[in-house]
Length: 405
Image 1 (cartoon, rainbow, N blue to C red):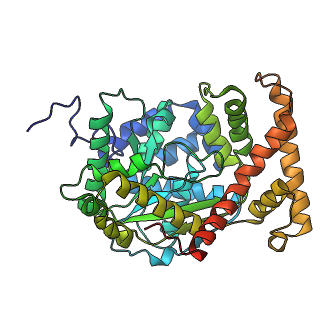
Image 2 (cartoon, one colour):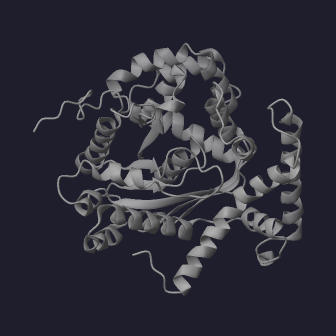
Image 3 (cartoon, rainbow, N blue to C red):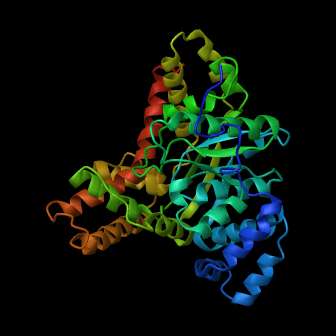
């Protein structure tokens, strides 16, 4: 039976990355944008406008754009805004296979960018990257990300359009991994984890299985799903995330202003991150195969979601900031062996400084004064402490013999 959909679910023109043939026109549009020169000035301070134009007009292919422009740019960001990027278990990935990297999500641009830098460093091919169309309000951003192997996830669709748009996305992901043997990075849920609690959306797993022609298990097995966790010692957007969570706590919701996502992108790129780690887990084949004994479809997805979360929490690299935040929140010294007194004083001062910055903005943003300092401090500390609690709960489950499948 033929379905009448508002879109062709096998036509990926609107969502796929740009091809080499589309590069010249995109490059000319980018060169007309003043925002581009601001971005480039941050990464290459000595470059004038004519040098930038000459450099970009010399790019002829998407692969060349990644190897000569975005790759080196992200390396500069690593050198200037981090205390080092490390990898865990990256050698377990095969050079011959393509994977679906199912990732936690802390930074709009850098989570996937740091993975690709890590892959390039070790001689692997880079991944294509899923990005929500809500982040692509500016044409220059849209052009830059599609030149950098990003494909578009349509967020703002009507209830009637959800199914066909999800099916097209599912078809695209399957086509990329299975037919084109190209890996993909996708966040475990829509939006960044603002409270530090990394959880997978069951709806994402359902979307991924939609394009399969056989069982749910077979559909998911084909994708070589592998959990990935990125962890930052310091989150440059922690103050922005706390501001948003304060609004939710006081008023029940938060409405983003025009250009706020772009501000978060720039803050994430330019802000200090301390040390950063990319960890990959085990491919989920055995976990998925074990779902065959579960008769209920929703239960299969629930169990798989729990298994992915457990693996992500297991591989997440904890920093002294995480342990200090836990102990400051509880008032205890459970993890005193994981940090020094100097680190504790430095992080306490960092949190205090951020809370004071938020307090100065409080009246302007309409937030009430009552309990403000206490609540802002608690939200920000919880953001850093949550991964410790998740890892602790994981250990507890294993010790008591409770398995997710």
